[in-house]
Image (cartoon, rainbow, N blue to C red; front, side, top):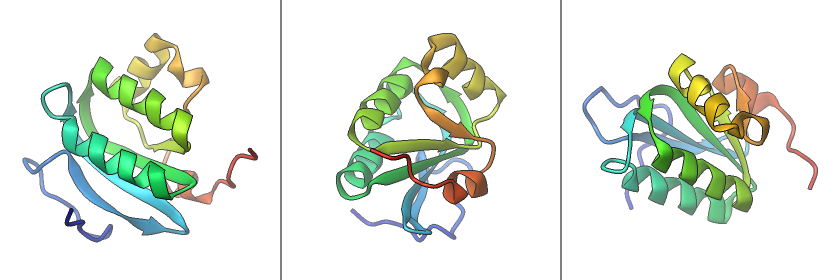
Length: 123
């Protein structure tokens, strides 16, 4: 799988995984656009590969415009495998997490910098 460096921003209209890379020792996956059962496969692969090799995976959700239950399922599964941090979820995504009741389980941060700056959770 070819991975773009994290500092490259993907313009709108490209696949849901805009970029991946290591920052401050954590693996960051930047997602964008609509995340549903028709589009989630590339994000699924990227996050699972990251979870297999990193203790902390940060999902930069700042450019996510829509998410459904397939996205929620992915987040819960990854949370069970590694420390998952959701950075910069927008209003709609925050509402979805709260409505599904997973906001009490999944760790979200207001910005990517906040997610990267937090110390790892003790196992």
